[in-house]
Length: 300
Image (tube, rainbow, N blue to C red; front, side, top):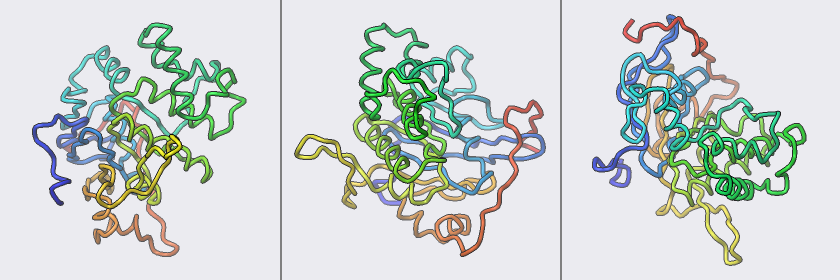
């Protein structure tokens, strides 16, 4: 790695995993995983289905503790906190977008977007201003009073983004946010994420199995055009956004490095992702229910 990729020991990481292992039943899902997410960095988490990507994201959110190791959010060990403190961190410092649709069907667009701030008991005038700002940011300002059932799939996903990034939390967790979307809607979601990253200095973990998605997000930046519009452009090689790639292979972290090094890596686990053989498929490893009470020991 070059100097630009070397971590600054004086800066507190946005997220840090220290020798994290977790198992469900007899299945080891993550094994001795360590990494840091730096401030204003986007770290792509990729690997075959069942490699432990989504479990890693749930651990980062403090939704359950690791069997061994420690997870820190801006220097705070999240598993050591009480439930109220965890909720405060999720409310103030984390935004989460998971694969499954999680909109409240009994609420309209405005109230879905406002949910995070209402839960934090923010003043009504500040909530209203933030909702109108964020719906404009994701292109839903004309849909403010519509019911969820009236929205298209792309609109629903943009509303989920709006609800997650309202108030501009410093850390975002994305779990395959373009899953199930057509190419046009996928591009819209990616561009929204780039604009949020560029203009609001967000750090993010971004889970994906789509190699084109990594390439797009790692090489594009948001800029203002001469007309004052925000446009997404391919960045000069000297001005690329701060990104890295972490590859998980059956629970092991087998690669951590820049996008170019990732694309050129000869590691078998990376080659299977970047240069899949014609007709080959990635194995789908079974991952037990993470909410199961039958937790195995990572030591076993």
